[in-house]
Amino acid sequence: MSEVTNTNKIDRTKLRSALQAGPDCLSLVELERLAGETSEVKHPHLSQCARCESELAMLRAFQSNDPLPDEGAAVAWITSSLERRLDEIKSGKKSGMRHTAGSPKAGWLGHLLSPSNFRWAMLASSAVAVAVVGFLWLRTSQEPELRADAGSGPAIYRSIEVEVLTQTGTLDRMPQTLKWKPVAGASRYKVTFMEIDKVPFSEMTTNDFSVTTPGSAIDKLKVGKPLLWQVAALDAQDRVIASSQMERISLRQAELH
Amino acid sequence: MILDMLNVELGSFHMGIGAADGTERRAKIGRDMSRELELSGCSDEDLVFRSRDSADSIERELMINELLRRQFAIVARWCLRFTSDRETAADLSQEILTKAYLSLNNFQGGSKFSTWLFTIARNHCLNAARAETRQAIGLRAEVDDDFIGEIPDTSAAPDARLEQESNAALVAQMLSETLDETERIVFTLHYGDDMPLDAISRVLGLDNRSGAKAYIVSARRKLARLVQRKRAGAEGGVR
Image (cartoon, rainbow over all chains, first blue to last red; front, top):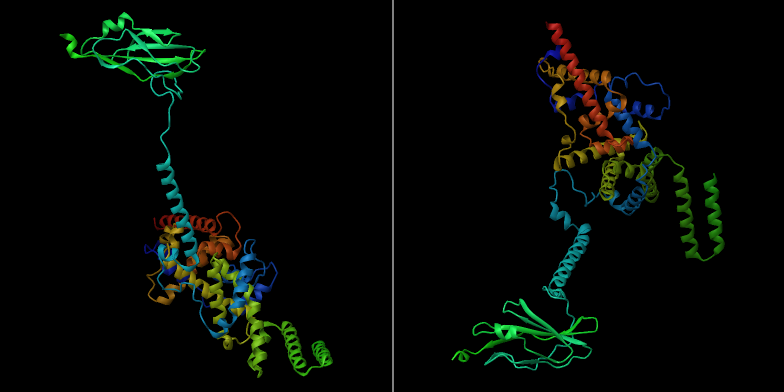
């Protein structure tokens, strides 16, 4: 027990050397004999020597003909590969593929460009390139989404526009009547008058193709204060089927004088 | 006897065909077939010695081919357990068989040929694994081996050989006192031969979930406890 009190500690090299075969260890022939034995009685040396136990286990594993569950196909592949290399074996040639001890190991790029992996690397690169190009093409070719209900007004699906006949723009005076062309399928028309900021201040409906300008609109129209109006054609269910442009009317400055 | 009869039968069959060239060629094929049949009945050791003694180069070639082919599967299986990559295993196998072929004259027949081949295969694969280990991530990192520092050294001994022997004896004693058989084997292969844990798992056919690693962890724990016990006992004795 005195050695246990020693404060010096063993290092891994010493452990390795302590685990090597010693002078009392069994010879290969003895191990071979033990490997062939099926007796449960253990050789006395084996119970004291982990090295011989290990050698015996390795020898038994080597001589065993039982393949592991997943290695049958690989063994067959290697066997046929060795059959092709039989002449190389007898000529004493070393295999050229495996990295031998001390040779520098290829980095990830070298591994990627090795003959066995190069084809896969090319395929993977092509797939990535196609995916990137496709993504960019889809992004650029896609038109902006149309939103029919953009804005605060009701949805308008128009194929025709109500064409206004009354002159608009800068006028000497407010027209007394506002006229437009009839729209097929319209049962009536709604005319809306708005401030310049599109806030409506007057609305009227008519079955005709014109309305008399309301007094509120005439009153609101001042120099420097234009107003807007718009006519929408409604069907029998009061759905907007067509609409005019937002018409702008303003008074000419000379009217003041 | 049977082989001689077969040879005669094949010869007479070929003679019956008649044409001179064809007859000769077929007779040769017949001879080769009978030789191969004969070789398949020989032991590995017989093939080695007969190939050495044979003056017929074709016969020698056939014997060597037969001997090597018999080892393909056994060597392939062994190498696959050291590396799960079949290309590398095939290369390792080729290297082992080449070494064996080149050293064939050293085989004295003191053991079975397969045992002799085992020593070549074992050393070759362990060297390859060590080289791989040095290049790749250190396998030692797989298992925390702090406990090594807990194993006492006897370096105070004046004689180096005595020191080594006492170390070996002490380690052997600790292993046999503490560990079960599989733990001892796994420990010895990993720390004594630097054998990778996954290779140990496959060589020993350890089919538990963590394979050899579980045994190493368990061994390490047991050894650390033993060292603590001994240290505590020694300290108690000193007081």
